[in-house]
Length: 125
Image (cartoon, rainbow, N blue to C red):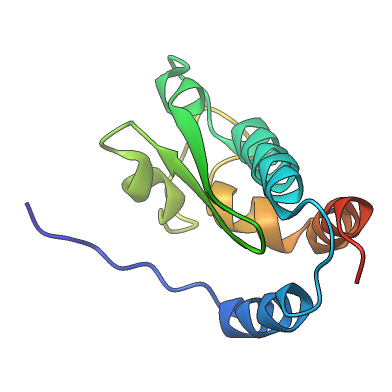
């Protein structure tokens, strides 16, 4: 099975800012990550096109690490998730816009202020 790479614009800036913040964290980074990935997952599910509910219900998260070194992953189990995520605007879904296209990516980019607030609530910089 071939691997597909998805690039998100602005991700390098997000990573750089997260590195700066994590260098000065004195708080509960794991709790911040748990809440952050839950927020992103919830938003992504809200934006997912719904036909049978399999795509929306297939969202999963994992959080690991300890101390200042934590990580979070959000993924979707449905084998067609990438197709729906990357579908061009000409693709017709039963659900109306803004559901559908880039549902996971937009869950992050449209909510950066809320995500930052979640992190700052848990950590002291």
